[in-house]
Length: 294
Image (cartoon, rainbow, N blue to C red; front, top):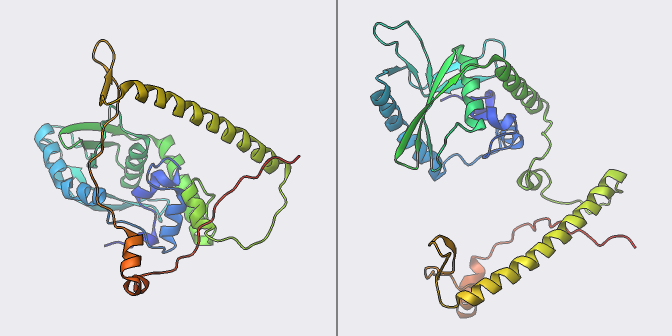
């Protein structure tokens, strides 16, 4: 198995470009720097398990046979950028020879069009393989198979490769990319140093704008609570609210009973055992916006 910390792969393409719903540039940076990452989640295992099924169904639907499963390519110019593709097509008998990438996907969603993060991944694969066409069979919601075609786009590929190259340079120099989410900020700055900094005019303006936004959210939250209470008061013991044509407007149903561990009762009943399993963790940072300067 290839060491993913030694090169940029196709799954790093969308995060490097800042368009992945699953990872940020910082996630890629930290993974390449050797920080452990969660790669054994159920959705990943489910997708890997169904990969062969999706590829088999692609052949069944198209009549195109596949070869070179899990073949790895390296880009001719950006040698630190590579791609491992699920399969390559075999030429059809009597047809002009044409190799294409096949990249199988599984999702709980339904796609009318391929999302940007998949398109970017596949374009990176095409760039590394030097091919012009890719098929992306997608198993959606466990029952619908849809096959998308992606043609090589040299301009888009160049942009993707440049984004990946810039991030790889940061990895080599130990220069983390800017945070793009609250999760990124927690990983970059988990603890404060107890020091103070003086805000420049831009930060002062941002703090003022944040106060305005928080005030607007509080007002809308109050309005939401009033409207919900009014609707629920009229519904009473009814579980479903519909319009005159039967369209469901709202539901107010009991959730299923759940079991929870009573921490306080356990501590009171077995204090010595409780203490054996108590651990101390570092406190997390809490952002508090103070009132406006008088």
